[in-house]
Image (cartoon, rainbow, N blue to C red; front, side, top):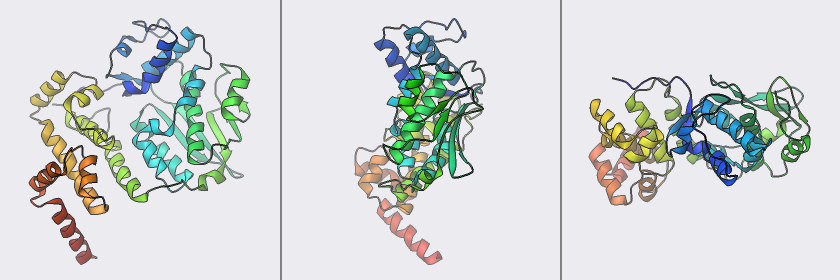
Length: 349
């Protein structure tokens, strides 16, 4: 038995929270349905659920109209940072240079929203271009989302390189929503409209700029986990895979993988998730143990992290609890496992 196939890309509700907060600050109530698009907006009044990407984009357009703020997406994008990308952002901050960081951004952005994409294009005459495209079905209008994305992209590149960095130019496929001065203030460069793509054009030399304080060892561990997440097809994954992806995400965020948190990320109640696990003969503890075993063996083999650090990463409050669990999984304590594995690696070298 498998879960129902998701027909449209979804994103976590937390991605929409800045939009909702801005609406509350302006006293704008969320209607049950958007009269212009017909999308159901009532779900935004319930914390913790996943929502369709097209509905989140529709919410942004609705907010801009109701608040009478044409530069809504542009201004919101300025408040976002690289840390809002969670695991993707931490991989970028530990990349060797800006080019490697942006390639990581492009590859793994679907972990945040699989229905829109960034692309990094090396041009001629020493230029490069970061483009943004919404590819999700059911999106009739996405101008606010596009402006948010490019303003956010601007903040990300500045964080990786220099706060004074500025692009050669910026362009959008749509007509301007706000005053031209608003765009120039954000991007500090010429801005063009009604172009063939929405993108940031910049000097490609910035791609060689080293990222300060990058940790290659940590990057390798994060990338292994991100690859595990991205390899799953969220449009047709079975329940074990969907729950497993959320366990991975919880561990990467330093959270204990509790059933109530996992249920919220999957857009269901704790009782519903438990019932579905029971129907398939699955136990959450077994799924969590399998993930913790995989992560802990990887860290013991590939890093010099101490047991206290590994226990914290896995969500254990005490090192002794991790040691007992690891011994149960592998038949030997973690220190002995690390020594044994390294001896075997040397023997096989």
